[in-house]
Image (cartoon, rainbow, N blue to C red; front, top):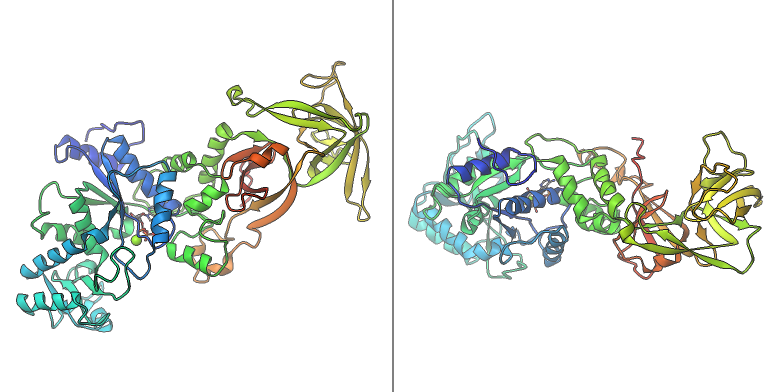
Length: 556
Ligand code: ATP
Ligand code: MG
């Protein structure tokens, strides 16, 4: 096997296969597709598949289609079609040519079904679903042939036409492939190709009464589009036999360069659920705010939470592609976003649990404007204005009456710290409320310490953040934690009961006044606090969603 992968990406078994197929001349270029079913919003598992399919097309100068696998009118909706398009674009990928819909091929599927009947390879079967199950047999025992298996070709063509015309009711009959009722692959035991559905379809309206099954529609759609490598997840491994059977038995497609299916392991992420059905359940039962709730593993949720497209692409590179089923540590996703935001996020200061500080030796009614870097390691990002006056806010956790030990680098009575981007201050005394909670700290500042160390050589080790009180804006902070309390909640039938009641905690604090212009979804580093972005829903409010902490702070 040669290694002509055109990038520095690690070679995986799919890239090996592509290299071989290009080397041998089987294909001169590759074509992949991302085939979502429009029955929900995309999640981070889909992102893995998107990065794989679109990524391979990019790396090999091939093509990747976006194809809506819309063969089930009952569960699908244009709302999902639109959100999927938006999410793929947002992730930074563009599809080649027009968007494809499996429903565009409905007339062709019908012709291919007739071809199979004409070859004696398909028949209309009137067994009930219970009977069909019984006839199918088990892994240990072969199935029994259907009494309808030997209906004549002419009659089958007529029956299929009647199914199409709506002459039978839903569930009354199906079209089945005639393959092998004794096959060790259950999917080869005369699988259904067409079933009757009277629902209205979001693309074709009431035109069709019969809808193709996945195993019939998918391989044909791939072949019509000239897909070379059809990548899907491991649970379709056995279905590959049916995929191959179908294309080998249709004259248009039985060629060497027809599409082939390859399976990779799906992404499972800790502390969340990934199946669209389960995510939908959370939405419908009001357990989250919607598909784009920032705790959801959906692309739209992650985006609202402040995740960048680059970090999701990087995550997908970090986890790689293999055939081993596993559970991915949430940390890998968080590390990816942290590493990206550390480089790109503008810095700002926000006080999440504020207490007031009065600088007693600072003039009253004076507000000073100071300059602070937008990014300490990247001068090109420029500077921002911050303010300083006699009244400030600092975080409650940054003050203690008595410094507990020498390592304590925050403010205490008689202990000096630097206010980030400003002066050093020394606390003198404080007030409490009736319950003993600290309300105000009194301090003095050293006017000669702006941007430099104290003149007398004394060392000031701690740095804490602050905001100036008169100009600061009150902000809502939405602090997120894992959505579920268990690593693999999906395994549990009653997964709804496993929702982490502390997965969203709302608090109110103060932020720099320029944050009134913060753009939704653009994450900032609130220095010493973590990464946050403005919520994209209530854009007129000052609401910040916590994206991720500065360091890995999970203790699980
Ligand atoms: P779900 O189980 O969440 O409903 P699905 O497989 O039914 O997912 P589709 O819309 O059919 O969802 O998926 C579109 C593509 O995304 C498929 O090629 C599928 O293999 C891939 N995909 C879906 N979930 C994952 C996942 N967790 N990891 C990797 N790829 C995935
Ligand atoms: Mg599916």
